[in-house]
Length: 36
Image (cartoon, rainbow, N blue to C red):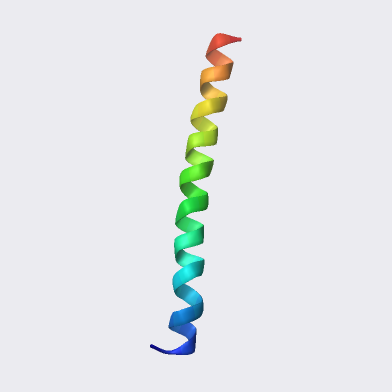
């Protein structure tokens, strides 16, 4: 695997995890807004 591949793989995984976290956070805010 090339150096670019080694660097890009964790970055892609991290970004995907971050997007999932942001989606969960947005859902959490929506739930709070409905309760409030």
